[in-house]
Image (cartoon, rainbow, N blue to C red; front, side, top):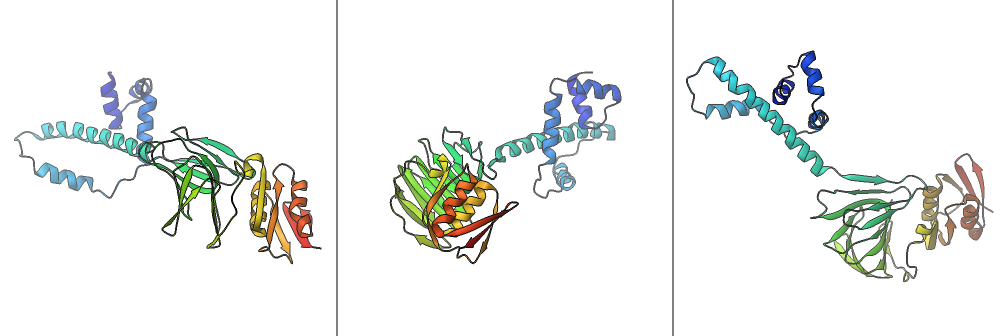
Length: 301
């Protein structure tokens, strides 16, 4: 039995056991099954197929032929419609499929984007982009923190819950956490849109918003973010932000006793030694700590 007949009977769900084995031996069997499976995930708009088919047929001038003849052309017509639906669903599925990259606690990863741009994700972050639409829209969605090196080309946008960063240069860092939004430009020029207002940053400039308040910062003199070298640095930063970053890097939880987590902290901690890191964030504030499983209790001396 030839290939076309087998596929036709498969679409009609009319294969016997012998024909089914022959169908499975087709060279493109796997591709046909993938097409069939992909259509299961496609949900089109509400559409009454029998009603629309009846409407179309009613516009066609009837031809005086027997019932058998009418059935003869109707079944191939439905098979063609089924094939077109499968092809359309596959096209829709592949062109709207997003690429999602996530990092876990204490994890960092480098993402190579379609145009030779790259992004390095910090711990507990999510980056989303679409390969198919990349040539027309170089857009990425970010939840967390990432350092970007952008290749020259059309506009490049980093979209976050707090605001959008439009790239005019090449290297910058974006950090978007709960009630925290920070952009640092390391090279070139970037624009930060927050509350419908754009602020342009040159190399060394920063945009920082904590709890809805824009915070002024000194010029950034480092060539790259400290976290790329497994260290978190802070200058006059609320202590709660220090603890939150510590939790992301070490996968622990803090419990505070009689400690003001809004007090400002200046210092740093390493990402590869928890004991040294704990001393770095407690000794300057004269705090003590104790460990219970994955919880660290902080107290004031």
